[in-house]
Length: 508
Image (tube, rainbow, N blue to C red):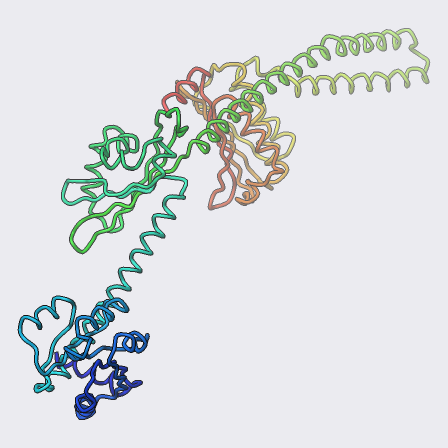
C-alpha cells in the first residue's frame, strides 16, 4: 500500500500539475484545500466552480478528479456527481463537507462517489484522493482491456466467418470433450446452421471424424503432448445444398492454466483436390494403357516387318545368290566376268547378313527359345561386340513367362546394355535374372563411373523413361541405383502374369 501511495505522489509532483476541479462556494475553504495539498507536496492545478454550468465547462480530458462541497446555494454534491458521471463514469469524485449526515453520506456513496471527507479532517484527503486515483486508473485499464478484447473477438469472428472452411473449438478435461464454438463455415460446407450445431454437436462431429466419433474423442482426450497436432481426411456424403464430398480436418491442442485442454480445429473442403487426384490417377492409368498398347502394336509391326523381310527380301536375296552361282558356272573362264560375279556374290552375302541382323533386331528369334537363352545370348553378343566382360546368371534354367513380359525383359536388358556401352565406361557387366511364383526380377549391374542423381531426373533421358514406362505398362517397376564403390544397377521387377499385377494393385 505504501509503495502505491509513493508512486501516486511521484506522479502528482514530478509530472505536469494534477488538474483538480473543486466545487466550492467558499473562497476561504478553497484556499484551505489548496494549502493542504501543497503542504502534502502535491503539484496541482485547481479550478473552482460554483454551478453546474461552470462544472461542465471545467471538465476536460486533463481533469484528474473532482472535489465537491456537499451543499451549495441551488447546487449540491448529488447534482455535481450526476454531471461528472455523465462526463466520465470512472472520474474520481470526492465529497468534502463541513456538515453531512450519515444517511446523506451513504446515499452519496451509493450514487457513485468515491469517498466523503469532513472539512475538519482534511488529513484524510490525501490518502483518499490517492486511492480514488488508483481505482480510476485500474478501471480505465480494465475498460481498455475489455475494449481490446471485444475488438479482438470481433476481428476473429469476422475473419473466421470469411474463411473457406469450418473453424471450430473443442474443449476437454479428463475424458470429456465438448464443442464450444463453430463458425458460419458449417453452413457453407455442410448446409447446417451454427446454432443448430451448438444445440446438437453430433450434426458436425459425426461428419468430421472417422467412424465412430467416440474413437476420435478418445484419441483427442487422451493426447497429452503439448501443442499436439492431428490431421485426417475423410469422404462424406454430400448434401443437396452443400457439395463437399471430401474434407480435411486439422486440430492443434493447447493447455490452459486451469488444466483445460483446448483443440483449435479447421475443416476444409478438399473435394476439388481429391477429384483432381482421381483424374490424375485415371489419366496416368489411361496413359499407361496407351503406352502398353503402343508397345504391343510396335512389337507386332516389328514382327510383321521381320516376317516380310524373311519371307520376301530374304527369299529374293537367296534367289539372287543362286542365280549368281549359276552364272559363275556358265561363265567360268572369263576372268573379268568372274571377278564381277565374285563382287556381286559378296554384296548379296552382305545384304543377306544385314537382312538377318535387321530381322533379329526387329523380332529376336532367340526369344522363341525362352527368356533365359535370350538373355544369355544377349550378354554374350554384348561381350563380343563391345569387348566388355558380360556375365549372366539365372535362378532357373527355364522360366516360362507371357510373351509381353518376355519381350519387355529382353528390350529393357537390351536398352540397359546400350546405356552401359554409351555412358558407363565399365570393364565388366553382370546380368542376373531371378524368378519366383509371383514376379520376375532383372538386374543389370556394371562397375562403371556411375550416374549422378540429377541425371536420372533429366527430362531428356528417354531411354530410362522408356524402360520405366514399359515396366509400368505391365504392372512392374524399374529403378536405377548408384553404388558407393562405383557402378550402377538397373533393377526391374515384373509380375509373372497381368492377373497377379491386378491382384497386387487391389491389395494395395
